[in-house]
Image (cartoon, rainbow, N blue to C red; front, side):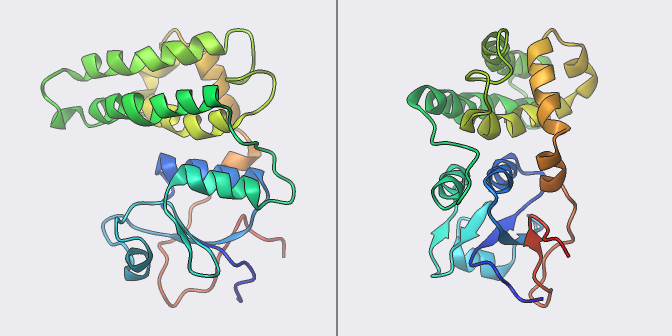
Length: 217
């Protein structure tokens, strides 16, 4: 199968950074060649493009490299003929920055609490819940974080809330965050998310091109 797209995306299915990049590509109707990697065995070709070794990594046809998830989201907006997402406002960026810094640190401590023994897992979770309270309040009178319509911030943030929820799904489902639960469920049951989470075998140099989103045959 020939590569009919000028873009190559190195990705890892469960990574929230890669997840939000793939969501943006799907929603903005951009096609890429996808290469699913194994984090313990990163392909040399990916490391040659991006030595830092994190996903996602988007390679443009002229060899230009984008290896930050939000920059890939931005690229999908600026290079799509029919973008669904729009460039975020400063309020959205501030919320995303809190997600990517403070909340992500608490999420990591909660998920890997056996590595951070200065506090219990429940104490780490409590610190992460501060951000959940912010989202719960924003979603009280509206379906999305910034109003009646899907925003860039929704897509940038929900994969991290998904990861937080999955640390202890029983606790999350019983916790007093009905609006966050509703909001998250909306994304997890969406057609776009089903496409984004399609399982792929680890990419090898000899493999045929795999298009993302899948092309109709």
